[in-house]
Image (cartoon, rainbow, N blue to C red; front, side, top):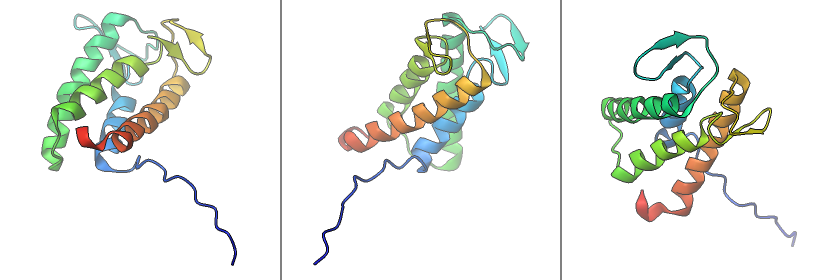
Length: 135
């Protein structure tokens, strides 16, 4: 008998409850398409600050609610709050920017936004897998 190696199951990053907020994270991250702080809008500016991130998080919350409703995805309060909190915490420039790996730099780039989107999807999927009773 040949022993088999059992690998842990990967989190489901392609499920709609993870893929939709990950796509919105990519599109709504400050500097990807535009940067807005509630007063002024600018295109192709990749710097960021706390006010901008909080404004984009509010837009993320509202757009995620509307898109999920339009797609027929049933969201719990935890889905919205955890995804929005992760959006704020993982936005490039707020705590950490990967790459280049500077702590609280306020700088971002499109490569950093893409990297943080992958991290967002994996972390959100892991949270959904680890704590299914809340989702």
